[in-house]
Image 1: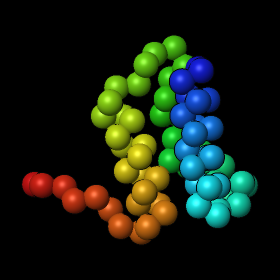
Image 2 (image 1 turned 30 degrees about the vertical axis):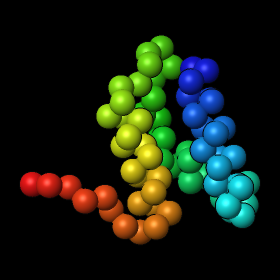
Image 3 (image 1 turned 135 degrees about the vertical axis):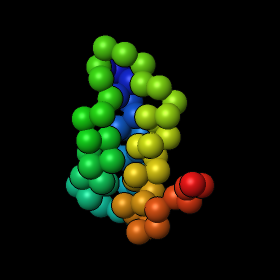
Length: 68
């Protein structure tokens, strides 16, 4: 659970540092994480990457490139 709170806090601080309001930053991070982290396990790197990609896509409107 600590890792989830830490990840949430760091992402929220980062977005706030860009000038985004604290409530908006929290909501963006809540949406990106979306309950995907389980409190009893360390998330796999692919899940961490997916959260970062989803947050970036929500902020920019651009989805990451995927090879087929």
